[in-house]
Length: 252
Image 1 (cartoon, rainbow, N blue to C red):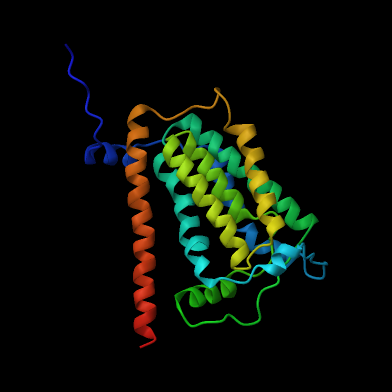
Image 2: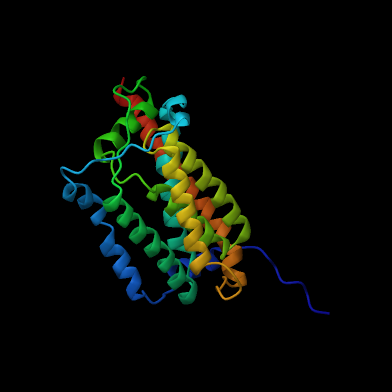
């Protein structure tokens, strides 16, 4: 009688997954080259009319600085996790194509339908949330809003993670929804921006990530992915906690 195989995850398995080499597809290099244009597009639109797609719901919802805890670190967690756990060449190519579609379609909208977000004149409070919100307002001008790249990226990442580990993917979808809610509550985006970003991610999923033809991760990678997810989550929010403590210390 064969003894049952252990389903425990060892450090050797984690190390093997993180250090496993894979081929960098040409579309990935194109994806990297597209990123800087996010900054330059508004500069080319000087003199154009910027639309404000505000709904009644946007006016009702007050600014909530503490939601920066989701808008910032939770977003970057979702962006970096696929980089660490997607190690299959075929799945990686499809993921890159999904991100490429999001970037290209978003850039077209940024040029054809330029929008801007109305931000509060003053940010009430002196806590960490207010400080971090003021920081994001300073470094990220209120343009390139429709569709929300923040939301589209988050959902595409979550949908990619579904192909690696279902539980991690479902948790990531919930996290992406929190990112979408936070985008509205910190007044970086309007409700319609978030909806458009989610729809764009859904289109990318339907084109590149859905169905039996899309590859899934192997058994070992499926087991290791949750461990890496927990470690990365703890790392990001550990850094947030340190920043919070340093902010409080600086205020005396």
